[in-house]
Image (cartoon, rainbow, N blue to C red):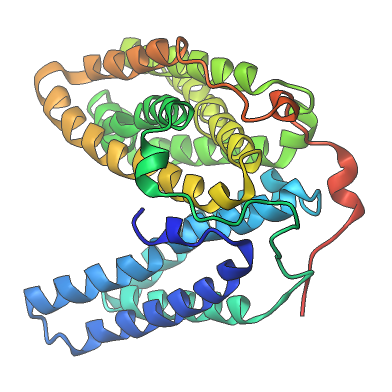
Length: 342
């Protein structure tokens, strides 16, 4: 949140991705020389995360740039992040089970190295700040006191933060209800499949929808999903609960990205960083702590609190940042041009 907003010109994104990926690779390697010392491992981990953390918002900002030029479909691009996460988790889990925990570092190094190789290639066309766009770097303090930005961050914190109890305690709750680990694994996979499907079909599903409609439907999905999670552990109900992940996460994320895409170009990277750092980062971490205390004292009723967050989100109206952004533009024009890697 501190480093990324300083990059306000899109032509700075690729160099930043290259240097951050290179530094992340170095700091992953540092772990091999810590000798098992806790403080050295902690230092290496912090340094790695300082470099790796900004890569996600910068990559999203890059995708936003080309999406607003109608050179890619953001949803179909973003779905590969979900696919890669599941594939990577599966591969690492298998390697750790077969060869031990040292494989975590080796696979991390391979992953970061591959990312660096892709970052070293130039896109065609390279991102350039367009003439007529304000090039002044926005102050972080000004963004955090800007009422529309604050409303956007609060809205997304409520919607995305409502997933904290699910991420932390749904598997525990379902296992206590008698569902096997295999069934729970299938349920989690179904949630990811729903997320991927919404990203893949977002252009068809949401073309012409207003941002307000997307946010309202996502908030309504939060109320329904977590209300059902609190009320029942029926397997059929849980299938519906997991399919709603495409609404509560993917649809909300598409709406958030569309809001960011329609911001002033010099604010786009900063808004992306704030979105990743606060709603998707700090607030989920806070709600995870609260959910842990709540699950210990209330059990499944903690999910009613998550549902209530969706109810509050219904009343937060985020205004489009310009007249054209009132309607989500996911037209087929994105398919007329393609980005090339050189």
